[in-house]
Length: 317
Image (cartoon, rainbow, N blue to C red; front, side, top):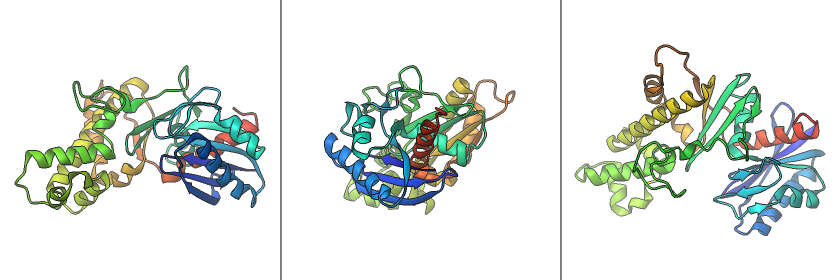
């Protein structure tokens, strides 16, 4: 039984045919258009290119946004055109297949639980660190969505009082200190505070500070750039502090670190583990969560959405 998972991101729409073992057999991709109707059409086109080559039973969409508990409606998606949109119904009508929606971090958490780094764990928290922070929580293998489909919005826990302003309207949110965007902001702050340092990043910033992306900071840290290494140490600090909060609230067995920034885990994860271990309540007297990096990488959301579609068709959801 094959299903299609679609990862609907701010820059691209990626679809894949997935079997019950979580293996991706075929893929298709298009750029993400700006309007809601154009976005629906783009999703239909990638699905149709796959259904032309395979017999598909259902489709799951992993969406970077708030999905209602009916798994059919996108309430709000910051980087996509949908607002209170009945997405599942509209796409289902055009492709004549059942369609189910899921928050992308929830879908990734499900995939890591079924096929990856969190296999079989009772309580799993996934922290997806990319442009911001997305999060998913699984209890006994079931996605916890909260009463209205929004939980757990961990990226917007206020971790630094009166800290950096966040696009959500608050200030001091966790993702403003622990994300690819945060890595770039920290490096720019450090350079401004130590103008005399001649480093790779300083030379880059002299041209245009906006050119310093999180990815560039990570690359410079790998090359031993002192400013980049300090920015990485700050990311590790705030990751550890945030994970201690997560452990105090959920007491997870496994924490999976996913997202683009997780590719640089060797530069920060050991330090973050130490900070987490020392900062949690009852440190030294309680078991620590196993902190692992995601095994499925960029494919986790797509694979998880396909698995969820299979569950719905089989009546397991």
